[in-house]
Length: 252
Image (tube, rainbow, N blue to C red; front, side):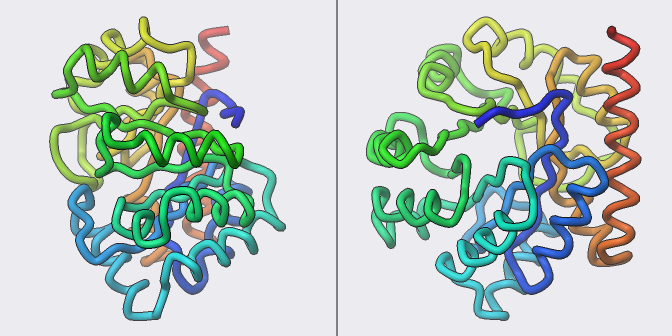
């Protein structure tokens, strides 16, 4: 999977209407789409993503239906598509089977935030067998040996969690981002994308200024979509993309 930089990945929950929303995000400048597969016990998610996940579950979204929506989206956009889910739905199908189905639906990579690297061997094997990248999450609390091990097996990009906490839009960027980028950068040549708490173009610019290669926006994107629909989401994404591109041009 090749991630264009500066990267702007938008996370949306797989639910009715997500294909329209994701298309709008891509029109606005999203360079990748993370598609959340709902799970009943989402430990890493804050209130906004939990609300979206519960709504999707009430609508009967299963892992199979989510991958069906991803296949619809694959036919309409030409950016990397990355299912993000918990270990439960993956293990329920079996790692190899889940990877086969995700790849068949058009996924480019997988993110499973609650599966530690040292327990992800079977999933990593499945990803490699079916041509998917496995994207690791690293937090400010990650130990150096775990950073090195996760980066050694990473594909596509490395997901840096900006805070020691759950997802959710925040007013300012954590001062732990720059030190974390500096710790991880020597271990990989892959792009470093920062997520959790990014809610504006200003925050996205700060992420690039901290040395990262892009951002992942979930909670704020969901909030905008809930309030303003696909047109509002497209406007929001376009604004963040413009901020990121401004920094990129200034660097050149």
